[in-house]
Length: 107
Length: 431
Image 1: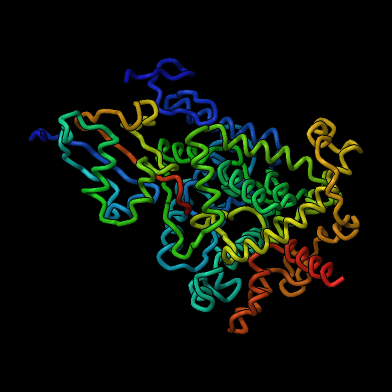
Image 2 (image 1 turned 90 degrees about the vertical axis):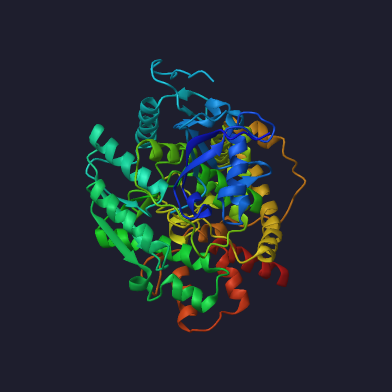
């Protein structure tokens, strides 16, 4: 059951990842607050959502590999390493800033 | 999750988990400890002397930007007495390098450092765009890599500078160690682990002060210090073998973050076991430069999009591998024979366990020593271990404006020591 409720969040892509997302570094999104099962949405949910709804590029494997954020991509939740926040299980809060930084690209 | 306090200051909120020890740090403490560790690397390896003029190989990417920022900070904080200059190479790739050079130009202003840009077109008469037009995308990384390494030397000489620092990080070094391990190339494995190539008497030394810094921390440092860097993929990078090594490293890091530094340390330990005659790295001062800087066989040179310099294809790799397998076995004998003489006593338990059964052809030491003789290229006058340096060989082919013979391309894709080995291999087969 999807609810009408939405969460305003900011998602940023840097380190070369922005090229997968219409070359836009900063995306202000309003995402559903609940997933299809009615649970609060998490960063893991967001990653899928970004792939399905936001990414125009078809090179999905450059962002997600085997169901996980590709190794070498850092995820920062409000500037904190997502490992400190429970990684994919972190429940999104209003006005969160989620940053994906690729370390894989050179200069 | 409840906020975790910083393990050092105990007051601010931890934002970073250090890959090497899982330490949880706040932004301020992380920035300090990151800088202090580079300072530690610089001082314990006696990398610089007061009054040195240092060229920072700057691509505008994260690594060289962080290197420039940290060296500027440390130079001021600890009064190193260094004169820092940014040195950038313009490979001539439209839509790639021209953008990143804009970043370097901004960095020059931000860090108040002079900037020198040298272009492939002025040095060689070819831009990479033109090279690719002539030879196609395949194998172009070889040209770019060979040209870039020499271009850094040339740029440094134009500036009257004898020491170039590059932004190679721990992940890059680990990746190169793994690649050389997978290719069975112990000499290059050994050379790739050293923090500096060349010594006081060298025309241009190379060093990598970020050798022990995790790529992850470099990116976090750049993020938290809000450094202005550029990231994009080289338009031409095919990247095969290095790409696989890189994925392997990144996958290992996810499971066991300390793995990257562990590989670097293992590489260093293995390097100690490789006899001098094989590595070309001398522990005494008689050796001028280890071959790596002259022959362009270091790991991905700073500035290449993917750090990639994959050789001409998997067939070539496989062929090379087969040849090197043979080589490795003959070297192995040499290693075991050296150790009892106490080359590296503390490791001799491991070596002692090695089977002696592989009694392959033993090479005369003299043969190997020729590999290290460093002279100058007869054509361009720059450092080379051969009469004609690789850059000039490649240029000759380009200038003839025709595709090179297949065997030549093959050889060029590999490193000069491999060339020699191949030739030795042929000689052996003939005999």
